[in-house]
Image 1 (tube, each protein chain N blue to C red):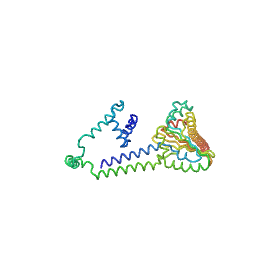
Image 2: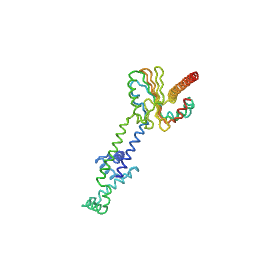
Image 3: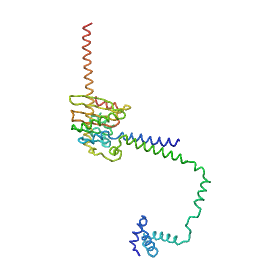
Image 4: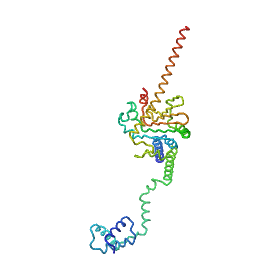
Length: 158
Length: 182
């Protein structure tokens, strides 16, 4: 009986690790596949090539954050039809994401709404979603994945 | 009689297991009748010679009658404990458990939205269609993404500060009125 339990335990561990590995994948892939949506992706390798802050010409705090990133995804929809298709997927993504996304910031400026969602666990930000919506026909989403300490994120607003 | 070059070709086929019975016979005849052979064929000639002599010997290669039964009796009497190491029903249960576990892994992978595109990232060197490989462009995009993040966070901070100032102003007004009253 012990052997059976061991076999099942090993396979369950494999299943859990398979989910964990997949969770590291791209989260905006489904939206990027929508017709009329433009997408761009900067992978971990390219981000690691920015070995110095001066490489990308950003502030010091920015440079520190770049070093904590694993990937940047940007999608933008500029037609009403594409936005209409992307929004339910985004909503679903935010609802089903584990652990749950928290709304960090929501700003409304006339016709423009920006919401920043964060997946925060143990003082580390694992994923940030910056959703910017303007009118009915403009939507852009930026996903930043990595292991960003919360204090580094807070420091960039100073 | 085949030529030396042809023999070389057939030997290559022979070692690959591709030679037909006719080609094998041709090779056997070639090695049996050739006296002076190039150096690269000497080992092959030796092998074919051994095969020829084994075929011509009178050693009885047939399996003795009752060998299987004798071996089975030895196994049953000498190693009875081996039969109890993995009883059939236990093997069956373990196989079933493994099958269920494999199905679980596959099911969980499918449920969690596995797709080829996502998995490609796990393969070293694989790139997405929209993946940026130009460092200049990547730097520009990174800068822009971080600027959006900072802009959003700062905007919120400014709003909070403005609200705090408004609250302070209201408090001042209240204090002023209270002083007038009392």
